[in-house]
Length: 218
Image 1 (cartoon, rainbow, N blue to C red):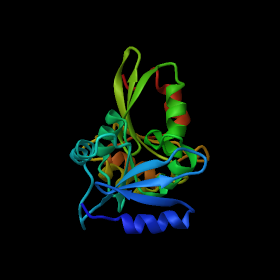
Image 2: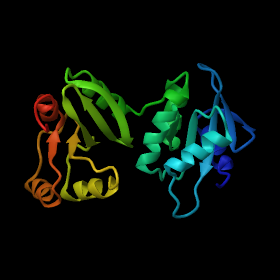
Image 3: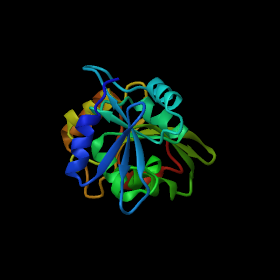
Image 4: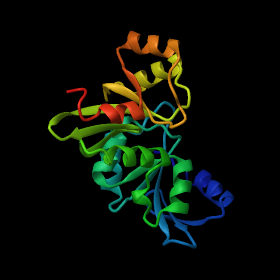
């Protein structure tokens, strides 16, 4: 683990925050509207990715950790899943900045895309619960139907290359389909649909997904 606090402190000052150093790579950040926030700052070596076991190690090393800042933001999907299980938020600096401005308890921070997706999904009558499986991937547990794993994207236009990237990124999570949650997206290009057929990954709009969630994919 690299000590990236000098870089983080500089970025915080640019945002108008003051901070002080604590043990174990932590910063305590002063806020005017909310209580001070403690953040564990993790600097990755070149080529490293922050994994699920790193979440466990961080929480074990620094009990009470609520927010883990990872620099650069190379976070494995299973790390997001483990963090949710432990009640910890892991993110890059952009989401830390949002959490400091928006959340009294930064451990509970959820990015805007996930907030929207969870709100839409949990309001469906067929949904019992949602478990995070990746940065924007979820296992949807449904009433009287089997669980369903999806990956989401808020891209306005999902290109064939974009779909290939999603499929590659979520290897190990193995979503059954990709759901485009951008409300301004009205459909997909012929190239995107051909790519979906080629990789065996259905792609649907959120409105279509919600319409069929209680009856399809049984």
